[in-house]
Image (tube, rainbow, N blue to C red; front, side, top):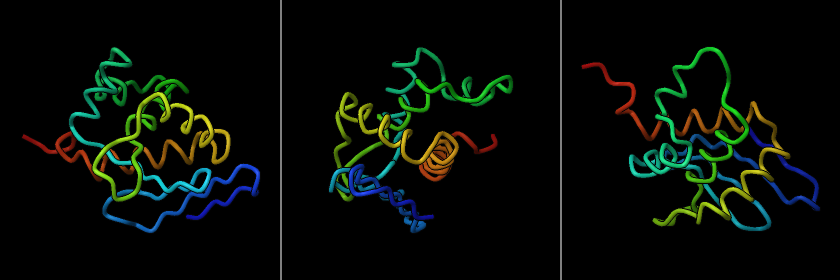
Length: 124
């Protein structure tokens, strides 16, 4: 999947089925969404809810705040070890939401969680 916005917004979403996550180019900076157990814990602390509790709630989809929080805590510069500061991540998440839309962003977050957090989906 490739989504390219006009030059003014400078947002590009490229799905290359990469092992490390999707590539996002925002304002000439390349990012990816990736999750670790620690990043999931930070999302849970921020939202004051468990991730599995959020995903098992069949009554509703993720709220905008929940979706942007997942993106904010999962963003990092492509190839970097460190994640983006969550405050900056929230700004970037807002731009992505406005550019690619809720469904596309949710799909990318879910794909990253499934890829990176297999411990959620293993049977005992």
